[in-house]
Amino acid sequence: MAFIRSVLHLLWMSVTVIPYTLALLLVRVCGGKQSSVYRVARAWLALSVNSAKPMLGISTRIIGMENLPTDPKQGVVLLCKHQSTYETFLMPAIMPRQLAYVFKKELLKIPFFGWSIGSLDMVHIDRSQGSRAFAKVLQQGRKLLNQGTWVIMFPEGTRMARGEVGQYKSGGARLAVSAGVPVVPIAVTSARVWPKKPFTKRPGIVDVSIGPQIPSEGKTQDELMQAAQDWIEAEMRRLDPEAYLPGK
Image (cartoon, rainbow, N blue to C red; front, side):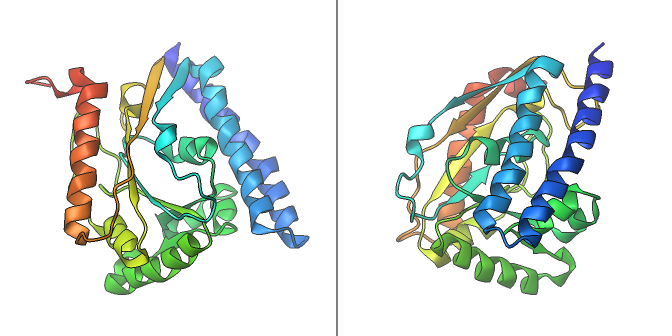
């Protein structure tokens, strides 16, 4: 039954992305503001997340929203634990400001979904370009942050299985130091219900914990990233202690 429900939810997302993408492209062609284009995309992401509760039995429990900046002009870099696709859809749906992901350009080739994210103010990079790719992240990231857009990055670079810790890369911290903005660490336990493998989703609760802002002033990129990593991994162990038991 769980497998069938997982298939139905995937089909639901695949079908609903088509009209939302067409609406998004129509808004853009008609000269709509970027904020209007983003709202259309955010509506589909929220639909996908909200439908997970009745279709998959997956709900979300969030703490720490009070740690987010309240000044609409304040930029911030969100550094989020990455365990599944779920949080990539969830974050824009729950955040009070427009978000910009840093993502690999290959995603632009996905029909409808790729066309949508390609129409948004986000940063798509060619990883094969190395330092040139990150120079683009710094340039476009600073511009977005100065506009009040929040940049979100997954510092481990890829989805990690439940209980695993990847190598935290300092790119997000480097952007924050360069732009003079704080980082906000976020812990997410999505792998409990939406694992990287296998495909089948399980009913349950995804805990999201938003940590306190960590100022970038007076810190090196490595110090800033280490502070964020320490908070995220400690919080992951608090939220999902079973995943870190010996032998797991």
